Image (cartoon, rainbow over the protein chains, first blue to last red):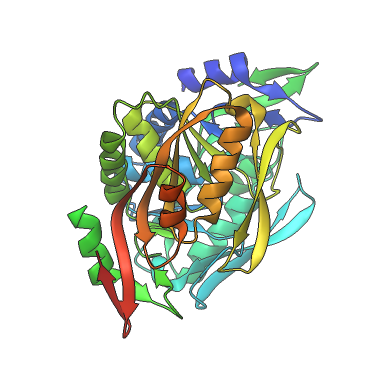
Length: 189
Length: 189
């Protein structure tokens, strides 16, 4: 998606290692008009897949999941990873490791909101090592549902997430792919 | 908003004490079409206020904040309360106490995304004791910005949040107001 690529090249900031900060439009301050267009493009790519639900995980995937779900005309479910309030005790759960935080966390989704009739589109803001996407696939699998694919705003192809998922036969769609970071510059595919 | 009131009366589940579970359409499984209409109604109520940003806090306010911001044509910013990844070290921060969890937490927002020129609409899913709303007012105040008001899907008027805010002169708009819970039944205003 050209608009997103332009935004990455003009605004994203390279941090330590190959970390890319896109908090100025994607995951702290949200350009909701861009987010809506991204949701529409992702929905279009999966149109015809009979998707019944969009699944994401707290917190940075929620905005894109909502706009994608809106464009598909289905509900958005977010797996909880923080204990902030009530959650149904009857949940599907999966573990994921955050490389950024060097911490393993548990994601939980109430059994009420995922079942065997669901065809699920997994949505997240960034696909890097694929840990949260793999955790969400596990949640869908535990519910007996089907995964239509994984849809993200940005894939970092220098990390293994996208390759692992595609090797498993999962359809992965990214609106922009970062190939590498070179001398502090972002190289898109 | 009649549609939301009907949904609360037909679907919400009363938990312990006066806790009301609305996770089936508001904050775990999200009815994004309803969420979009709620955002439009809230935006309409604040039209003419020259709002420049919508502010919410992780995680349950993000969906409504995004759709309200979309309808207003401004960015949505969410204050971080979890340490899950990068955040600019230069932040405004405020403490809030969660009565549900009996825990105090810190919300942080990068100084880049709130400033003295901002007119901010604070958005959240539920207004109960008002702790997170008060924390967000503090963030805006530290940035030198102006608060246009607090907009929520559901206000629980048996808790003190709404009263405290209105007594401070803050405009509070709720799409549905729960007056009390009586014998396991929800009584709306």
